[in-house]
Image (cartoon, rainbow, N blue to C red; front, top):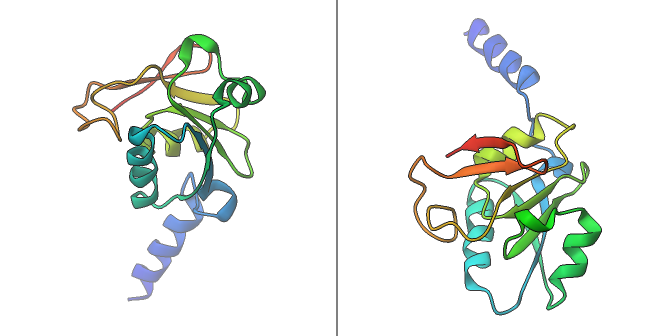
Length: 140
């Protein structure tokens, strides 16, 4: 039994992302008329993130302030409290967790509104997200 507790404790200590309020809280800026954004927020909440939504018709200024490259734009933008990392669009929770393991990644995006993304449809293993340099980041 002692070995089980040691193994569990070791796994918690060495996990790449330990759930913490700073890493688990997202502030999402979304247009008040966009329903798919709410679907993505639900996906993130059911994946263990706490989410605050701010409905705004001035998405362009938030994207510019957070450094979202215009070519990677989507319908909503989120920022991770504590790290300042940015999530643009319908990025799956697994890709967000991967981003959180590497503080050098400024942000990740699912450009446009891909049909095979959380909030838009079912993940099918073919959704490619990119980092803010436009390089492939994950496939979900």
